[in-house]
Length: 453
Image (cartoon, helix red, strand yellow):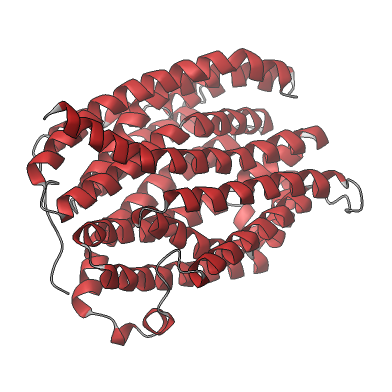
């Protein structure tokens, strides 16, 4: 591939990647601010909210799948120049996202205590987490609306607007965290519930901003009739949406369920393990923001190329992106190592949790290399051409047949030390690399999936 073509492809990639990465980073900062501020209250507050936010993670698996399916189709139709079909895909994705958001909102408001019992048997953590869940419940359905639009903005070459809204929301959330957790100025001191209320207000802000942008014509509008009445949508398009979304959803649930099981396992190893794992995960997520941005950007750029029938160019670009993702992973691991002394100095944990955190940060430094490679290929390259099934099989088998059973046996049967269990739970990214690369070189993802709708 000629140097000028490569330069253009990477220019297009980074136009998408940088805003998305920045948005992921800002979202991670909310979790970091929650952990940092609640850590000043006490270790139990930090641990209970860490477990309670696993519900938001589970919800993100659903809307992530619905948005992922939307992106798979919309990116190719946008590359083809068919904006009407993109608008219809938006309506379909919004329908499913809001329906699931409503279910999560009702469940966390009505039975938060029972939900917390899934993650821990500690009555203090259950009580604190239940307070958080009831207060934060409204954020699920409101946040789902904004997240679908964030996805469509990226597809429609408006990633900068998506990043702007998300970043302003994060700033608002962090400010409100401080005010409502500690009762600064005129605000009441609400502790755990203050962190939850700050999240709800931030989600309302995002949705209001999105509505303003749509009214200004900055993004495709939502066809409310097609969202509410499936019978008036194109049956062919809906069938395609279900075809490409279902494997993504099963993949998300299989992978996310496995990751949630990590929290369940760690949650039963004591509050020291939970607190250390929470902080290590937050740092890893913040550093991984660039990796995830690349994954999303690669999917959009390759999808648009495939929608234009630039199949050979997309194939060559995919190889370049794979090599690039490895270097990004190595660089990200070095960043985590560089941050470790600083984090160890400022976190407010007991001696045992402090030791756990140091070792878990070392685990995070190598874990992110595999995560960068796999996320680029599985969540970026494969879905760009409609190849969404392989990721489902790969993640479900890796987690549920290998890593989760090994972790549970290590923790509850062999009763290995906490750090040994934590190490086992970091193996999933490396277990699947051989299968992922073998499937990649079959090039089943090099395909134009658009139709005349």
